[in-house]
Image (cartoon, rainbow, N blue to C red; front, side, top):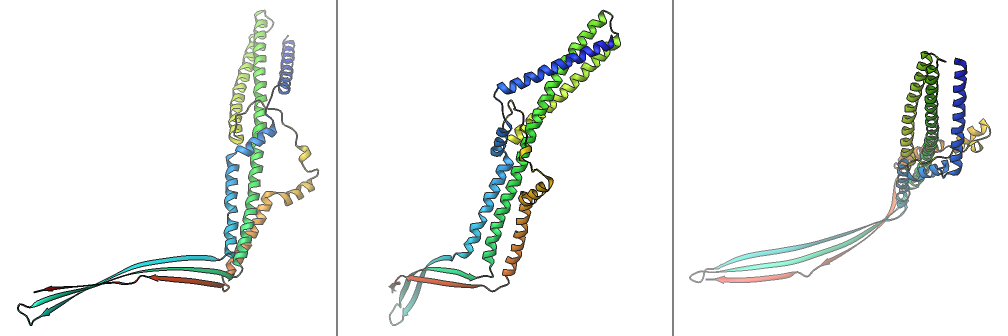
Length: 320
């Protein structure tokens, strides 16, 4: 009797599982759902780490025009102005008269000055420092682009992983829900059979234990599903909807292991970024060596002064 009840329960579980799978396939085919490609596009547009790396690349791009400015002349303009004020007071005492007469003579002079100048300097030779700085800046840009590719690969991988994990946890959650429904029905049948005397109380306790374990697994599946939803939102930047099954990527993989190794050595952005880093370090050494060479430059300057005519003031006062 027990063997027949167990076979009936297994048969019921298989039927419910098959129906659930058929229902899921029908929903995926008939309803509009999010695809893996759509999720990757959203992650490529919205991921904050990727946007930050793009901004860093734009900042590195500005090093190239800064390095090229070493080839261009430098122009400086100066201006100066001033105002001079001079005042002198002389006292004269005449003693031939009584009482003595005293005269004060005040002499003043005002003078304003203005000066303008311009200086142009063109570097002719500086030990090839400008050329090496330009090449170094270009290598920095190339290295930053490869670093951006590394970030893109990581973000897209995280997005695909979050998509598939959510799809997996959703399927596990549905399976556990169906399992709890089956175990609940099995417990009901076992209790009915116990009431008619076909099984013992031990069978009822075992069915209750299986139902409790199924409910515990359901709670764990719900927790994992909520965590996967949050991770999906963090990586892709939008809330998940109904997800389509993922598409295989075997057609995009190298056919053989040697081909995969060769492609990785020649096309991997991490390898290329490291190679550009070597170039940057070598050019830094050349720039330091160029500082030991003499510098040759051409300088031209022009200065113009403007002086106002002095204004003189003479004032005499006589006191008896």
